[in-house]
Image 1 (cartoon, rainbow, N blue to C red):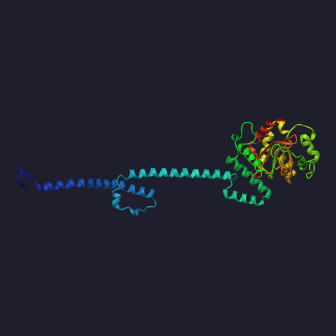
Image 2 (cartoon, helix red, strand yellow):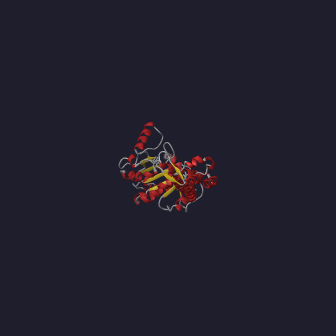
Image 3 (cartoon, rainbow, N blue to C red):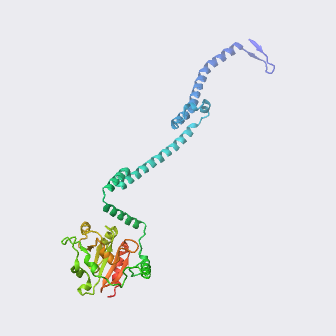
Length: 350
């Protein structure tokens, strides 16, 4: 037994060997527990540190693990939340890309269907080129006429009903052009001029029972012109100098359906197509017998009646009676033809 007397402590008995032994025993008991706790803390801390590193490397595969230093990993405690937030943003980006791809695919399918029932645009272009090479000059011209007519409809360049006065058959522009032409002394027919009968004798009927090269002659002209059969009736002539005119054909379809029989029976069409071509078209479009068509391939009737158009080849309308041109409209708009014909007939004073 030793007696230690620290200067600041009261006097007490202290057994040193017993104290050493007791302390060692306590340490032996505490060391395993401390070791287990240390391993547990280190494992948990290591899990929190490594998880963000793994997530970052997985989501941003363009970056290497070697770019992340241990100190950075240790500073990334709580990086799990950041990684989850980045994962949500990545999912949104993937969703947007998927939606964009879906829309592009749908647009491509629609474009292919428009090009020709699923045929690709390049294939459609190749087919169109082959078809263009195989078309004849007349077929190409007819196709171009249809395209021009469709373009005219799309751009709304045709006259509207507002261009015509109520009950009128001439637009404001047509009236001004007729007045200007009359004052300028242009050599063409005007309303009130004599209606020559002889040019009608040069027309060719498209009736299949007659010869395609046979003109109707004086007998045919007598059946057409009211004054040659001692009648005060009238005759309407719609002329078209353009070959296979899309505008004229569309107009004839409309006239055959919309005009009353009292007017349609007095209407004839004179065009520059052959009788065979006219027969093919009327048969194909079920217009046989509904409208009377005469061929003027040499344009002799059109020249005699100055019906080739004012400034360009175009349709013209004539109403003749009592050996006079009672009504005349040049550059007739096909979309307004029904109104023009109807108003021209209504305005007659026979």
